[in-house]
Length: 324
Image 1 (cartoon, rainbow, N blue to C red):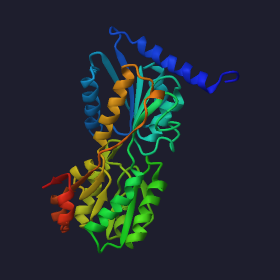
Image 2: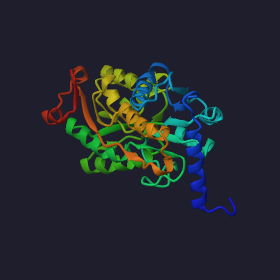
Image 3: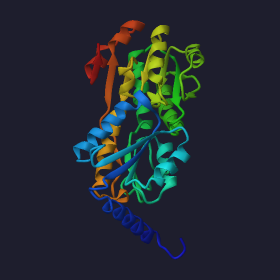
Image 4: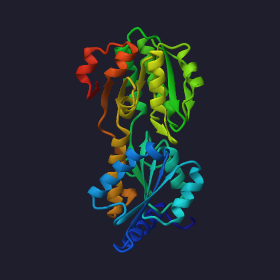
């Protein structure tokens, strides 16, 4: 990039993005490529939310918009394939998938969801000024870890040994663990070594339950691949009468005991609003990264009864969602 200033590069990049969107005539319609970490039934709720929000802004899949969705099994190759189709914009869930797209193109707009810290992930220069062709929604999972430890302690004050479970897609696991350990140390809770996995196995379950009073899921992984991990974990916890604190609302709906955090679907809907702005002509470099702002406490009383846990009134009175 000899002889080209950074300012000049960003101006040229912005002009390229504007030109690409301007070329999307009503006859040709718009095209969006999406890269997701799940497929099939696991992906349907999120795709429905994405389509619904885009339709609300006038972009109807199958009408004036074509949504090309790929389940990430080989992200680098699939990112190249999506880019080679010359879409008008790209959408990704999780930091690794957004980064795969960002490496594949510096001109096509990219909007992300399910990213804890996009600056740390190398996706944007700053929240206020993303600086290139990428923007999206930061879900703040790491900083909520302390709240989840406090919730676990309020729910189970006698619990002193907690197994921690994290998903491999969350590269901010160490930062999340750091936040969780601060609260655990203050409350006298000992963490077992964090386990990471892409799929649920009985062996993993046995490792978690062998020396724990409870399990805490510090990172979101309700669904990866075609498998609902949280559903398997919830079923296992009920069979073993072992409480589990999750980080996402969807896991409680699948049978988990309790969670505090934002909704996967809510994050997608939030990011879809930014994607709509981009399809309307906004430049990602000038669209600030937005922070997930709504966090909900969810409780599944059916699961509580099944495992013999009495949920304190202090939690029930604060709960945004109670499944009974």
